[in-house]
Image (cartoon, rainbow, N blue to C red; front, side, top):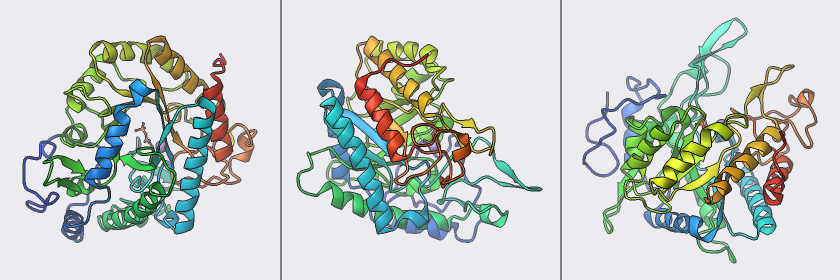
Length: 407
Ligand code: PEP
Ligand code: MN
């Protein structure tokens, strides 16, 4: 049962409450549900109104100034990797990539981590098979455990509070890193995650008493994922109601009409910096699917930031080990095709949304990982295959050189 009246630290209309919401855990009958929700509702904001406003301000100049954006991090963060050392490694790799991107292109780069809250995963399949058992899918550390046992996969609302605490620690490190000397204003790093679990996100809504703006204080830049971007659904309604800059993934089935409906909901006042559209269509689909969408959004006058996610449309299952993987060549091809399409329509291709590990993993094929046989050496992702730093640098270099996309 929903605990009455506890949504953030205010009582007001909640348009998303009665709308359909995909991908939500069934945990309201759990003994710890009310307490977890109450703790979140009373908690300090993770991202402040001022910070959120700053990121929005700096995204508002991307299109006119030619500034680039690099959004990057794990597919799914892990509670066990929220140590000081792991966080420092992640920030170091984000900086390395962004610095290289900036050096090669001559443009400033706004850095945004998939960090400090990327603990919930939407899943296409509700269950998976392990040996002779069918168990619930792993849904991110905010919901359950990756251990392959039925009990570990039960949704536990106490994990929302652990996710908040882990996020708080990561957010502190991000803030300290942003404040170090010599960092250009607005350049970040900032935090971002998919705003998926409504029980968590809605309890971290806070109204700014000075400006009156409603912010989602779980992160600086929340995005709505491919599986929950129904323009009439709860996730879009929630993001419509907040003052944060927001992102929206667009998969290969997206149509111009659907994207216009999303723009109307998410950026009704046509405000630069408000909405970042993130196509993730796949190297083969992007050529056909993206151009009519860019034309529709441009002619309707939505000043969106266009960011390419070349990861999620290019996932394949490796032939040998049956592991999910991605080929660097596909990732590079989609990125360059994206850039060509945006350039061809006179629009600014603002950069990349990536899944990159801080360590030397072997999850994607290409560069230092010559073939699928190497994948099982260091495959540590909790969810999707990430590039390692060397592969990610190769991608950034390919973007900067603008090498023609291979056939
Ligand atoms: C993700 O970014 O990890 C993800 C699940 O993306 P999408 O919603 O685009 O599938
Ligand atoms: Mn992913």
